[in-house]
Length: 321
Image (cartoon, rainbow, N blue to C red):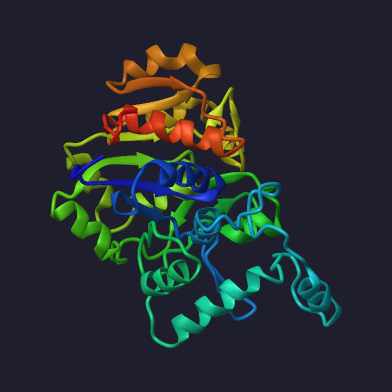
C-alpha cells in the first residue's frame, strides 16, 4: 500500500481489537487510524477506566489475555482480594498489572492532558505504533434503558451481567461533544482511503462514535468505501450481548439486521460463511456482500480477516493481497 490514504477503523470491544491486531500486521503504522469507542468509559475507585481503548492497547502491544479476551495476560488479582477485605466495591475487576494503566491514565488526565494525548503517551510507552484515537476527548457515556431503569453501560454489562431486558440506548453529551480533531482533519484533508467498521456491537460500540459531531453525516458524504464486518454469526453474537439486545429490541438476531442498521453509510459488508444465504438480501440493500471466514481464533485468522476486509474495501497492499 502506498499513498492511498489512511484506513480508518471504528472499533469497540474484543472483536474490534482482534481485527485491528490483524490489520496492524498487514498495514504500515502510518496507514492505519483506529477510532475507539469511549462510551464504555467510566470513573471507578478514583480511576478513569477506558475498556475499549485498553483492549486495543493490549492487543497491539501483545499483552492481551488470549483466554479471557480482555485485560492483560498473566494477570493476578491480589488487589481485588485486598479491596474486598476492606469493604471496597468488587463488582468490576481491576487486575494488579492492569491497575498500572488506569493509574497512569488518571494521573495524566489530572495533570491536564486530554484523553487523546494520554492515550498517545501510554501507547508510545508500551511500544504501540498504530494511532489509537478516542472518538472524543469529551465524555459521552452510554446509558442503557432497561426494564429495571436506566443504567450506565458498565453497570449493565458488568455489575448486572447483561440480565435486564434492554429498551434502548442514549449517549449523554453526544450533541455537544467534539469529534476527535485528528479524525476530522483526516477526512477534511481527503486522507482517508477507506473506512472499516469492526465486528463490534452496533448499538453500544459503533453508534456512540457515529453520534458525535456529525460523524454519521460525514460518512454518508464520504465517497470512498465503507465496509462493516458482522458481529453476528449464525444468529449469535461472537462475543457480548449484541444478539440479546436485538431480540429485546424486537429485531431479528442476524447479520442482515446489522447490515440494515448501517445501511445509509455502507458500500460493503463482510459476513461469515455460515450466513452466506443472506448475501442476496444484503445486495438488495445496494451493499456489496462479501462472504468470508470471520471467526478470529488465532493470529493467522485475524490477519486473514484483515486482508479480506481490505480486499472488500478495494485496498491494494504492497506486494499484492
